[in-house]
Length: 163
Image 1 (cartoon, helix red, strand yellow):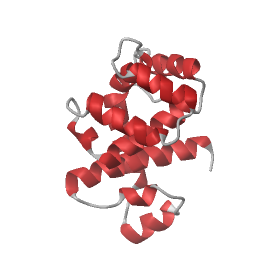
Image 2 (tube, one colour):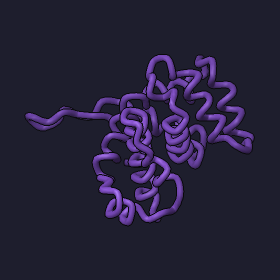
Image 3 (cartoon, helix red, strand yellow):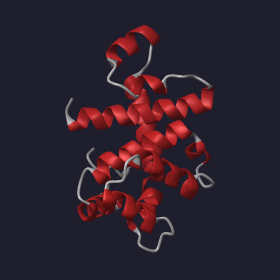
């Protein structure tokens, strides 16, 4: 699986986790392993592209705030996150999910879901931890900047690192 395919799968998983929270469904679990999503799509009628877009929309909605938590030295959670990342702490995804819930759960109630927070933590790991700490923050900050004016009738939206 290429990096982009993995990121797309994480976005679809995030969208599925959000849908699970909104509707009581239980499809996010299909995105946690290496199961064939094509088979899941055929068996359960899952629209991967729609879930991926739902996940991207949530990511774009919280990415600026997550960037602040992870990259702004003034953030109360930054020191702990930087320590976890720099030491390669075991269970870092779980710890990051906890930071996400603690820092943004009140502002974005959907993030109080352990499944949603877990997928967000995995996306942060992919976009941030698997790159160097400094370069990750720089790339993320660049992605948050508004894009050039779109053509007439289009709307500029921020994109996630790696998209």
